[in-house]
Image (tube, rainbow, N blue to C red; front, side):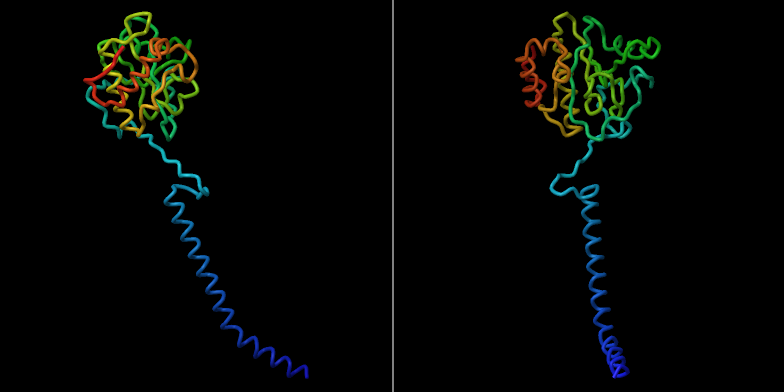
Length: 238
């Protein structure tokens, strides 16, 4: 009896082997297909899938890859601890911060020279990506793929612009105002930003900078409207 049962079991197992192979093959195919779908999802999103969260994309551009306008003078401050640390800016640039230099009557060249001298003076941290003179000249002091020391806790994800001014009230000349509009529009186009992403230093730290735009918020609102208008010949400058 035991012998007959053993033979019967062997026959049954023999009959089951093709079915087992088929099931294993189907499971293997399903696993491969699932892996392919997961890989496709990772490629599309730029990383591991994160449920319903939209993928985060960067807009940082290497300085050497940028087509800078011919009206921007590139005069980088040498790398140093106090005004150009060489630290990469975030992969996503989220804003543009407008400042005033706070030294009435000084030129863009003089303020750029001050940034350079900080490496020797070693008494404070300060710089900006751009300086705009009272004559409308634009100097780039720090590459756009590096941070500048201008906007405190927003240094890591913003581009900074310092503007020269003739008086203590901080009001810009028309040439400075027009150059600021032109530069900010170019930056917005380059990084996919809009007027809502353009802020004052005051909006970051509460510092009275740029002074005229802080004391006259209606002038700041007008500046942002001029940005949206997109026509440098039609402005409501202060």
